[in-house]
Length: 282
Picture 1 (tube, rainbow, N blue to C red):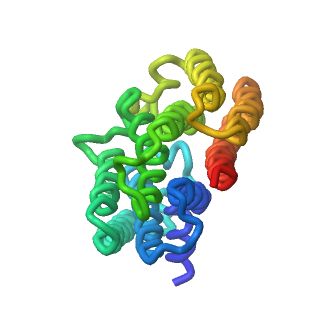
Picture 2 (cartoon, rainbow, N blue to C red; picture 1 turned 90 degrees about the vertical axis):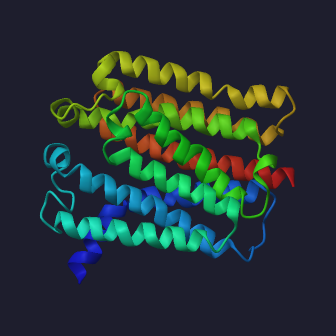
């Protein structure tokens, strides 16, 4: 039993779940809800299960590539079989949809979209993961827009969602998630994945990614000038650019893992700063 628990924890990637939870509550709190809504528990659990399933499915379909890039993962290391991994995925997705149906039609529609993105990212004939730009866009839509909207839709209608925040989160996540591809270049090249570092080469990819990230973090200042946000939202720009500079430096020194960790920290920090600005606004 302990073997399955350890394998499950590593399949779902706990560090992603922390970011996922914060992303969900960013939308929930930004919608003006500081109290516990009656649908909060099933909505939050469904959101978590959706990402858990997507992470586990990705490891199932990438077992051969992971044997090169990340041989210590549960499936290539032999901790669990591929069939057992797929069984966990099926149970998580079933629970996701069942819980989503308890919340609302809008929420169920959104969580169904999240399920589709998670499956299409890894499974052929879609296999978004191997497609140039589509890979990064699908992650940005899932992590950036959908997670925010899943939290938002618990208490507010979708047509009232803040488009400027959605645009910023999606743009940030699109360029930030390129960082995960640098350490996987060997296996991706062997198995034909068209990631940005493979297509552009590493140095050009770094130049494109970080130029875009620096520009992206000027958006909160623009939003403030246009009176879309309050002064505290500008902190997103200041702290964001500082962390981007550190991640950029790590990558230039070939510290790919360090860059990835900085981007995960930035993902969490951006959401927390947005939550803080929303609380001050109330």
